[in-house]
Image 1 (cartoon, rainbow, N blue to C red):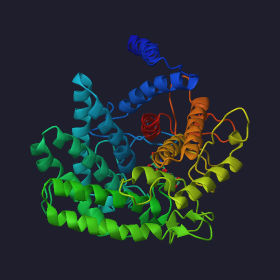
Image 2: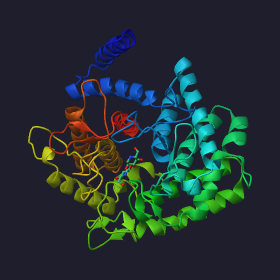
Image 3: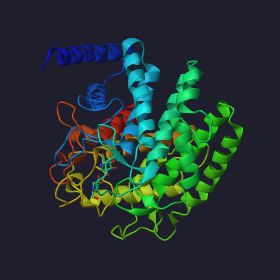
Length: 432
Ligand code: NOJ
Ligand code: NOJ
Protein backbone atom coordinates (compact mmCIF):
# COMPACT_ATOMS: atom_id res chain seq x y z
CA UNK A 1 0.00 0.00 0.00
CA UNK A 2 1.50 3.39 -0.89
CA UNK A 3 1.72 6.32 1.48
CA UNK A 4 -0.93 8.41 -0.25
CA UNK A 5 -3.49 5.65 0.06
CA UNK A 6 -2.75 4.86 3.72
CA UNK A 7 -2.89 8.57 4.60
CA UNK A 8 -6.29 8.94 2.92
CA UNK A 9 -7.49 5.88 4.76
CA UNK A 10 -6.26 7.26 8.06
CA UNK A 11 -7.99 10.58 7.45
CA UNK A 12 -11.18 8.78 6.39
CA UNK A 13 -11.03 6.71 9.59
CA UNK A 14 -10.61 9.79 11.78
CA UNK A 15 -13.45 11.53 9.96
CA UNK A 16 -15.77 8.60 10.60
CA UNK A 17 -14.97 8.72 14.31
CA UNK A 18 -15.46 12.49 14.48
CA UNK A 19 -18.77 12.36 12.62
CA UNK A 20 -20.11 9.54 14.74
CA UNK A 21 -19.13 11.19 18.01
CA UNK A 22 -20.59 14.53 16.88
CA UNK A 23 -23.91 13.06 15.90
CA UNK A 24 -23.97 10.64 18.85
CA UNK A 25 -25.58 8.28 16.42
CA UNK A 26 -24.42 4.74 16.45
CA UNK A 27 -22.89 3.93 13.11
CA UNK A 28 -23.78 0.56 11.67
CA UNK A 29 -21.37 -1.62 9.71
CA UNK A 30 -23.14 -0.44 6.61
CA UNK A 31 -22.55 3.22 7.53
CA UNK A 32 -18.83 2.55 7.96
CA UNK A 33 -18.58 0.68 4.71
CA UNK A 34 -20.43 3.44 2.84
CA UNK A 35 -18.10 6.17 4.07
CA UNK A 36 -15.05 4.12 3.06
CA UNK A 37 -16.62 3.06 -0.22
CA UNK A 38 -17.56 6.63 -1.10
CA UNK A 39 -13.93 7.69 -0.78
CA UNK A 40 -12.73 4.74 -2.85
CA UNK A 41 -15.36 5.35 -5.53
CA UNK A 42 -14.42 9.01 -5.91
CA UNK A 43 -10.72 8.14 -6.25
CA UNK A 44 -11.31 5.32 -8.70
CA UNK A 45 -13.79 7.32 -10.76
CA UNK A 46 -11.43 10.29 -11.00
CA UNK A 47 -8.63 7.95 -12.09
CA UNK A 48 -10.71 7.16 -15.20
CA UNK A 49 -11.05 10.80 -16.23
CA UNK A 50 -8.37 11.61 -18.80
CA UNK A 51 -5.82 9.06 -17.60
CA UNK A 52 -2.33 9.01 -19.07
CA UNK A 53 -2.25 8.39 -22.79
CA UNK A 54 -5.68 9.90 -23.49
CA UNK A 55 -6.79 13.30 -24.75
CA UNK A 56 -7.90 15.91 -22.21
CA UNK A 57 -11.61 15.59 -21.50
CA UNK A 58 -11.78 11.85 -22.20
CA UNK A 59 -13.65 9.70 -19.69
CA UNK A 60 -12.77 6.06 -20.26
CA UNK A 61 -15.60 3.62 -19.56
CA UNK A 62 -13.08 1.30 -17.86
CA UNK A 63 -9.31 0.79 -17.92
CA UNK A 64 -9.93 -2.73 -19.28
CA UNK A 65 -8.54 -3.07 -22.79
CA UNK A 66 -9.24 -6.73 -23.58
CA UNK A 67 -12.28 -8.57 -22.19
CA UNK A 68 -14.19 -6.43 -22.82
CA UNK A 69 -12.31 -3.55 -24.42
CA UNK A 70 -13.84 -0.51 -22.70
CA UNK A 71 -10.85 1.78 -23.04
CA UNK A 72 -12.87 4.38 -24.97
CA UNK A 73 -14.97 7.46 -24.38
CA UNK A 74 -18.69 6.63 -24.46
CA UNK A 75 -20.89 9.71 -24.72
CA UNK A 76 -23.48 8.25 -22.32
CA UNK A 77 -21.13 6.94 -19.61
CA UNK A 78 -19.03 10.11 -19.67
CA UNK A 79 -22.02 12.46 -19.41
CA UNK A 80 -23.51 10.51 -16.49
CA UNK A 81 -20.13 10.51 -14.74
CA UNK A 82 -19.38 14.19 -15.28
CA UNK A 83 -22.81 15.06 -13.86
CA UNK A 84 -21.59 13.61 -10.58
CA UNK A 85 -18.39 15.65 -10.94
CA UNK A 86 -20.55 18.80 -11.20
CA UNK A 87 -22.00 17.84 -7.81
CA UNK A 88 -18.51 17.35 -6.37
CA UNK A 89 -17.43 20.71 -7.83
CA UNK A 90 -20.40 22.51 -6.26
CA UNK A 91 -19.52 21.25 -2.81
CA UNK A 92 -15.72 21.46 -2.96
CA UNK A 93 -13.27 24.24 -2.17
CA UNK A 94 -9.62 25.04 -2.76
CA UNK A 95 -7.45 22.79 -4.89
CA UNK A 96 -10.13 20.10 -5.06
CA UNK A 97 -12.58 22.57 -6.56
CA UNK A 98 -9.95 23.75 -9.03
CA UNK A 99 -9.26 20.17 -10.11
CA UNK A 100 -12.95 19.36 -10.65
CA UNK A 101 -13.36 22.59 -12.57
CA UNK A 102 -10.45 21.79 -14.85
CA UNK A 103 -11.86 18.32 -15.59
CA UNK A 104 -15.31 19.76 -16.31
CA UNK A 105 -14.07 22.44 -18.70
CA UNK A 106 -11.91 19.90 -20.49
CA UNK A 107 -14.93 17.63 -20.80
CA UNK A 108 -16.95 20.50 -22.28
CA UNK A 109 -14.23 21.23 -24.86
CA UNK A 110 -13.78 17.57 -25.71
CA UNK A 111 -17.55 17.17 -26.14
CA UNK A 112 -17.58 20.03 -28.61
CA UNK A 113 -14.82 18.35 -30.66
CA UNK A 114 -16.88 15.13 -30.59
CA UNK A 115 -19.82 17.04 -32.08
CA UNK A 116 -17.78 18.37 -34.98
CA UNK A 117 -15.60 15.29 -35.64
CA UNK A 118 -16.28 13.23 -38.77
CA UNK A 119 -18.38 10.25 -37.64
CA UNK A 120 -20.47 7.52 -39.21
CA UNK A 121 -23.79 8.47 -37.64
CA UNK A 122 -23.42 12.16 -36.75
CA UNK A 123 -24.51 13.69 -33.45
CA UNK A 124 -25.73 10.38 -32.02
CA UNK A 125 -22.32 8.73 -32.47
CA UNK A 126 -21.94 6.70 -29.27
CA UNK A 127 -18.23 6.08 -28.83
CA UNK A 128 -14.94 7.90 -29.40
CA UNK A 129 -11.34 6.73 -29.32
CA UNK A 130 -9.14 8.13 -26.57
CA UNK A 131 -7.38 10.44 -29.05
CA UNK A 132 -10.73 12.10 -29.83
CA UNK A 133 -11.35 10.53 -33.25
CA UNK A 134 -14.64 8.70 -33.69
CA UNK A 135 -14.70 4.92 -33.37
CA UNK A 136 -15.45 3.67 -36.87
CA UNK A 137 -15.88 -0.10 -36.51
CA UNK A 138 -19.29 -1.77 -36.73
CA UNK A 139 -21.53 -0.70 -33.81
CA UNK A 140 -25.15 -0.13 -32.97
CA UNK A 141 -25.55 3.53 -33.91
CA UNK A 142 -26.74 6.23 -33.54
CA UNK A 143 -27.56 6.17 -29.81
CA UNK A 144 -29.61 9.29 -29.31
CA UNK A 145 -29.62 9.29 -25.53
CA UNK A 146 -26.02 10.55 -25.76
CA UNK A 147 -26.59 14.15 -26.89
CA UNK A 148 -29.47 14.48 -24.40
CA UNK A 149 -27.37 13.26 -21.46
CA UNK A 150 -24.43 15.42 -22.52
CA UNK A 151 -26.75 18.46 -22.64
CA UNK A 152 -28.24 17.68 -19.21
CA UNK A 153 -24.79 17.52 -17.60
CA UNK A 154 -23.47 20.63 -19.30
CA UNK A 155 -26.66 22.57 -18.47
CA UNK A 156 -26.14 21.54 -14.85
CA UNK A 157 -22.59 22.91 -15.12
CA UNK A 158 -23.75 26.09 -16.90
CA UNK A 159 -26.23 26.87 -14.13
CA UNK A 160 -23.60 26.39 -11.43
CA UNK A 161 -21.14 28.63 -13.30
CA UNK A 162 -23.83 31.28 -13.86
CA UNK A 163 -24.52 31.25 -10.11
CA UNK A 164 -20.82 31.86 -9.64
CA UNK A 165 -20.95 34.86 -11.99
CA UNK A 166 -19.30 33.32 -15.03
CA UNK A 167 -21.72 34.37 -17.72
CA UNK A 168 -18.94 35.28 -20.14
CA UNK A 169 -17.67 31.72 -20.33
CA UNK A 170 -21.15 30.20 -20.36
CA UNK A 171 -22.37 32.41 -23.20
CA UNK A 172 -19.34 31.89 -25.39
CA UNK A 173 -18.55 28.20 -24.86
CA UNK A 174 -21.64 26.46 -23.51
CA UNK A 175 -24.76 28.22 -24.81
CA UNK A 176 -24.37 31.00 -27.38
CA UNK A 177 -28.00 31.07 -28.55
CA UNK A 178 -26.90 31.22 -32.20
CA UNK A 179 -27.98 29.16 -35.18
CA UNK A 180 -25.80 27.66 -36.51
CA UNK A 181 -24.17 27.46 -33.13
CA UNK A 182 -20.58 27.29 -31.97
CA UNK A 183 -21.49 26.07 -28.50
CA UNK A 184 -21.82 22.58 -27.13
CA UNK A 185 -25.16 22.73 -25.26
CA UNK A 186 -26.97 24.60 -28.00
CA UNK A 187 -25.77 22.07 -30.58
CA UNK A 188 -27.11 19.17 -28.51
CA UNK A 189 -30.43 20.89 -27.81
CA UNK A 190 -30.95 21.67 -31.48
CA UNK A 191 -30.18 18.07 -32.36
CA UNK A 192 -32.48 16.60 -29.71
CA UNK A 193 -35.32 19.00 -30.53
CA UNK A 194 -35.26 18.14 -34.24
CA UNK A 195 -34.49 14.41 -34.11
CA UNK A 196 -36.19 12.85 -31.08
CA UNK A 197 -38.82 11.18 -33.27
CA UNK A 198 -36.23 9.05 -35.05
CA UNK A 199 -35.69 5.37 -34.22
CA UNK A 200 -32.21 4.73 -32.86
CA UNK A 201 -30.14 2.27 -30.85
CA UNK A 202 -30.86 1.81 -27.13
CA UNK A 203 -28.56 2.50 -24.18
CA UNK A 204 -27.54 -1.17 -24.01
CA UNK A 205 -26.31 -0.85 -27.60
CA UNK A 206 -28.36 -3.73 -28.95
CA UNK A 207 -31.86 -2.80 -30.04
CA UNK A 208 -33.09 -0.35 -32.63
CA UNK A 209 -36.45 1.31 -31.99
CA UNK A 210 -38.14 3.90 -29.77
CA UNK A 211 -36.92 3.74 -26.19
CA UNK A 212 -38.50 4.84 -22.95
CA UNK A 213 -35.05 5.65 -21.51
CA UNK A 214 -33.94 7.72 -24.48
CA UNK A 215 -37.22 9.65 -24.64
CA UNK A 216 -37.15 10.38 -20.91
CA UNK A 217 -33.66 11.89 -21.06
CA UNK A 218 -34.52 13.72 -24.28
CA UNK A 219 -37.51 15.25 -22.52
CA UNK A 220 -35.39 16.30 -19.57
CA UNK A 221 -32.82 17.87 -21.93
CA UNK A 222 -35.69 19.90 -23.45
CA UNK A 223 -37.08 20.95 -20.05
CA UNK A 224 -33.69 21.88 -18.58
CA UNK A 225 -32.66 23.42 -21.90
CA UNK A 226 -35.74 25.63 -22.03
CA UNK A 227 -34.98 26.94 -18.53
CA UNK A 228 -31.39 27.73 -19.43
CA UNK A 229 -32.52 29.41 -22.66
CA UNK A 230 -34.87 31.64 -20.64
CA UNK A 231 -32.14 32.40 -18.14
CA UNK A 232 -29.97 33.57 -21.04
CA UNK A 233 -32.81 35.43 -22.73
CA UNK A 234 -33.22 33.13 -25.73
CA UNK A 235 -37.03 33.16 -25.50
CA UNK A 236 -37.99 31.73 -28.87
CA UNK A 237 -35.70 28.77 -28.33
CA UNK A 238 -37.17 28.23 -24.85
CA UNK A 239 -40.66 28.00 -26.34
CA UNK A 240 -39.55 25.57 -29.00
CA UNK A 241 -37.83 23.28 -26.49
CA UNK A 242 -40.87 23.41 -24.20
CA UNK A 243 -43.12 22.38 -27.05
CA UNK A 244 -40.88 19.37 -27.80
CA UNK A 245 -40.87 18.37 -24.13
CA UNK A 246 -44.68 18.40 -24.16
CA UNK A 247 -44.86 16.22 -27.26
CA UNK A 248 -42.32 13.82 -25.80
CA UNK A 249 -44.72 13.20 -22.91
CA UNK A 250 -47.20 11.40 -25.16
CA UNK A 251 -44.42 9.42 -26.81
CA UNK A 252 -43.23 8.30 -23.36
CA UNK A 253 -46.68 7.40 -22.02
CA UNK A 254 -47.32 5.30 -25.15
CA UNK A 255 -44.90 2.75 -23.61
CA UNK A 256 -47.44 1.79 -20.95
CA UNK A 257 -48.83 -1.71 -21.49
CA UNK A 258 -52.10 -2.26 -19.61
CA UNK A 259 -51.88 -6.00 -20.44
CA UNK A 260 -48.44 -6.45 -18.92
CA UNK A 261 -48.80 -3.68 -16.36
CA UNK A 262 -45.33 -2.37 -17.16
CA UNK A 263 -43.70 0.38 -19.16
CA UNK A 264 -42.29 -1.50 -22.15
CA UNK A 265 -38.72 -0.35 -22.76
CA UNK A 266 -38.72 -0.38 -26.58
CA UNK A 267 -41.55 0.18 -29.05
CA UNK A 268 -41.23 -1.15 -32.60
CA UNK A 269 -37.99 -2.97 -31.80
CA UNK A 270 -35.78 -4.10 -34.67
CA UNK A 271 -35.74 -7.68 -33.40
CA UNK A 272 -37.73 -9.33 -30.70
CA UNK A 273 -35.30 -11.04 -28.38
CA UNK A 274 -36.86 -9.32 -25.39
CA UNK A 275 -40.16 -11.13 -25.05
CA UNK A 276 -40.82 -9.75 -21.59
CA UNK A 277 -40.58 -6.07 -22.53
CA UNK A 278 -39.14 -5.62 -19.05
CA UNK A 279 -35.98 -3.56 -18.69
CA UNK A 280 -34.28 -1.83 -15.79
CA UNK A 281 -33.59 1.12 -18.04
CA UNK A 282 -37.13 2.25 -17.15
CA UNK A 283 -35.96 2.86 -13.59
CA UNK A 284 -32.72 4.45 -14.78
CA UNK A 285 -34.90 6.70 -16.94
CA UNK A 286 -36.80 7.94 -13.90
CA UNK A 287 -33.50 8.92 -12.29
CA UNK A 288 -31.63 10.37 -15.26
CA UNK A 289 -34.74 11.91 -16.77
CA UNK A 290 -36.28 13.38 -13.63
CA UNK A 291 -37.52 16.97 -13.93
CA UNK A 292 -39.39 17.69 -10.71
CA UNK A 293 -42.40 19.15 -12.54
CA UNK A 294 -44.99 16.50 -11.78
CA UNK A 295 -44.47 14.40 -14.89
CA UNK A 296 -44.00 10.75 -13.83
CA UNK A 297 -43.14 11.25 -10.16
CA UNK A 298 -41.12 8.46 -8.52
CA UNK A 299 -44.29 7.10 -6.91
CA UNK A 300 -46.28 6.95 -10.15
CA UNK A 301 -48.33 3.73 -9.94
CA UNK A 302 -47.23 2.55 -13.36
CA UNK A 303 -43.56 3.04 -12.53
CA UNK A 304 -43.96 1.18 -9.25
CA UNK A 305 -45.69 -1.69 -11.06
CA UNK A 306 -42.77 -1.87 -13.50
CA UNK A 307 -40.30 -1.75 -10.63
CA UNK A 308 -42.04 -4.61 -8.82
CA UNK A 309 -42.06 -6.82 -11.92
CA UNK A 310 -38.37 -6.17 -12.41
CA UNK A 311 -37.47 -7.04 -8.82
CA UNK A 312 -39.48 -10.25 -8.69
CA UNK A 313 -38.13 -11.34 -12.08
CA UNK A 314 -34.49 -10.79 -11.15
CA UNK A 315 -35.04 -12.40 -7.78
CA UNK A 316 -36.17 -15.53 -9.56
CA UNK A 317 -33.47 -15.76 -12.23
CA UNK A 318 -30.26 -14.97 -10.32
CA UNK A 319 -29.17 -17.72 -7.90
CA UNK A 320 -27.28 -15.22 -5.70
CA UNK A 321 -30.64 -13.64 -4.91
CA UNK A 322 -31.99 -16.86 -3.47
CA UNK A 323 -29.49 -17.27 -0.66
CA UNK A 324 -31.05 -16.15 2.56
CA UNK A 325 -27.95 -14.62 4.17
CA UNK A 326 -27.89 -11.41 2.12
CA UNK A 327 -30.70 -8.88 1.94
CA UNK A 328 -31.53 -6.89 -1.18
CA UNK A 329 -31.98 -8.07 -4.76
CA UNK A 330 -29.12 -7.82 -7.24
CA UNK A 331 -30.56 -6.35 -10.44
CA UNK A 332 -29.58 -6.82 -14.09
CA UNK A 333 -30.41 -5.12 -17.40
CA UNK A 334 -33.28 -7.29 -18.62
CA UNK A 335 -34.28 -10.92 -18.03
CA UNK A 336 -33.25 -12.24 -21.48
CA UNK A 337 -29.77 -10.67 -21.31
CA UNK A 338 -26.80 -12.94 -22.04
CA UNK A 339 -23.99 -10.35 -22.19
CA UNK A 340 -21.25 -11.17 -19.69
CA UNK A 341 -18.52 -8.94 -21.10
CA UNK A 342 -16.94 -11.89 -22.84
CA UNK A 343 -18.56 -15.07 -24.10
CA UNK A 344 -22.29 -14.44 -24.00
CA UNK A 345 -23.02 -17.41 -21.76
CA UNK A 346 -25.42 -15.85 -19.31
CA UNK A 347 -26.42 -12.39 -18.17
CA UNK A 348 -25.73 -11.10 -14.69
CA UNK A 349 -26.77 -8.45 -12.21
CA UNK A 350 -25.01 -5.11 -12.67
CA UNK A 351 -23.45 -2.92 -9.99
CA UNK A 352 -24.65 0.35 -11.48
CA UNK A 353 -28.23 -0.89 -11.81
CA UNK A 354 -28.38 -2.28 -8.28
CA UNK A 355 -27.05 1.09 -7.07
CA UNK A 356 -29.66 2.89 -9.17
CA UNK A 357 -32.41 0.79 -7.55
CA UNK A 358 -31.08 1.83 -4.14
CA UNK A 359 -31.35 5.47 -5.18
CA UNK A 360 -34.77 5.03 -6.73
CA UNK A 361 -36.20 3.34 -3.60
CA UNK A 362 -34.79 6.10 -1.42
CA UNK A 363 -36.43 8.74 -3.63
CA UNK A 364 -39.74 6.87 -3.45
CA UNK A 365 -39.40 6.81 0.35
CA UNK A 366 -38.82 10.56 0.42
CA UNK A 367 -41.77 11.26 -1.86
CA UNK A 368 -44.10 9.16 0.32
CA UNK A 369 -42.74 10.86 3.40
CA UNK A 370 -43.58 14.30 1.91
CA UNK A 371 -47.11 13.05 1.27
CA UNK A 372 -47.39 11.97 4.91
CA UNK A 373 -47.47 8.26 4.03
CA UNK A 374 -45.20 7.18 6.85
CA UNK A 375 -45.64 3.43 6.56
CA UNK A 376 -44.88 3.35 2.85
CA UNK A 377 -41.94 5.67 3.38
CA UNK A 378 -40.43 3.35 5.99
CA UNK A 379 -40.88 0.28 3.79
CA UNK A 380 -39.16 1.90 0.83
CA UNK A 381 -36.34 3.30 2.95
CA UNK A 382 -35.66 -0.22 4.23
CA UNK A 383 -35.78 -1.52 0.66
CA UNK A 384 -33.14 1.03 -0.29
CA UNK A 385 -30.89 -0.01 2.60
CA UNK A 386 -31.12 -3.62 1.48
CA UNK A 387 -29.67 -2.76 -1.95
CA UNK A 388 -26.71 -1.09 -0.25
CA UNK A 389 -26.21 -4.23 1.85
CA UNK A 390 -26.26 -6.27 -1.32
CA UNK A 391 -23.58 -4.07 -2.90
CA UNK A 392 -21.48 -4.23 0.24
CA UNK A 393 -21.66 -8.02 0.22
CA UNK A 394 -20.28 -8.34 -3.31
CA UNK A 395 -17.87 -5.40 -3.42
CA UNK A 396 -14.13 -6.06 -3.36
CA UNK A 397 -12.25 -5.23 -0.13
CA UNK A 398 -10.32 -2.42 -1.86
CA UNK A 399 -13.57 -0.82 -3.01
CA UNK A 400 -13.14 -1.64 -6.67
CA UNK A 401 -16.33 -2.27 -8.60
CA UNK A 402 -16.67 -3.89 -12.00
CA UNK A 403 -19.61 -3.82 -14.38
CA UNK A 404 -21.32 -7.04 -13.27
CA UNK A 405 -21.62 -9.51 -10.40
CA UNK A 406 -21.62 -13.16 -11.39
CA UNK A 407 -25.13 -14.55 -11.05
CA UNK A 408 -23.84 -17.74 -9.36
CA UNK A 409 -20.82 -16.67 -7.30
CA UNK A 410 -21.51 -12.96 -6.83
CA UNK A 411 -17.92 -12.10 -7.76
CA UNK A 412 -17.23 -8.94 -9.71
CA UNK A 413 -16.91 -9.76 -13.40
CA UNK A 414 -16.75 -8.12 -16.86
CA UNK A 415 -15.14 -4.66 -17.21
CA UNK A 416 -13.16 -3.82 -14.05
CA UNK A 417 -13.35 -0.40 -12.41
CA UNK A 418 -16.33 0.59 -14.52
CA UNK A 419 -16.57 4.38 -14.28
CA UNK A 420 -20.35 4.31 -14.46
CA UNK A 421 -20.53 1.82 -11.53
CA UNK A 422 -18.73 4.37 -9.37
CA UNK A 423 -20.77 7.38 -10.45
CA UNK A 424 -24.09 5.59 -10.04
CA UNK A 425 -23.01 4.31 -6.62
CA UNK A 426 -21.97 7.84 -5.61
CA UNK A 427 -25.35 9.24 -6.70
CA UNK A 428 -27.09 6.60 -4.58
CA UNK A 429 -24.88 7.28 -1.58
CA UNK A 430 -25.59 11.02 -1.80
CA UNK A 431 -29.32 10.35 -1.86
CA UNK A 432 -29.04 8.24 1.27
C1 NOJ B 1 -21.25 -4.45 -26.44
C2 NOJ B 1 -22.19 -3.56 -25.72
O1 NOJ B 1 -21.46 -2.64 -25.01
C3 NOJ B 1 -23.12 -4.36 -24.84
O2 NOJ B 1 -24.02 -3.52 -24.20
C4 NOJ B 1 -23.86 -5.33 -25.67
O3 NOJ B 1 -24.66 -6.12 -24.84
C5 NOJ B 1 -22.91 -6.16 -26.48
N1 NOJ B 1 -21.98 -5.36 -27.22
C6 NOJ B 1 -23.66 -7.06 -27.43
O4 NOJ B 1 -24.22 -6.30 -28.46
C1 NOJ C 1 -22.24 -1.70 -22.16
C2 NOJ C 1 -23.48 -1.02 -21.73
O1 NOJ C 1 -24.58 -1.76 -22.18
C3 NOJ C 1 -23.54 0.39 -22.27
O2 NOJ C 1 -24.67 1.03 -21.73
C4 NOJ C 1 -22.30 1.16 -21.90
O3 NOJ C 1 -22.36 2.43 -22.49
C5 NOJ C 1 -21.06 0.43 -22.35
N1 NOJ C 1 -21.08 -0.93 -21.88
C6 NOJ C 1 -19.79 1.10 -21.84
O4 NOJ C 1 -19.76 1.08 -20.45
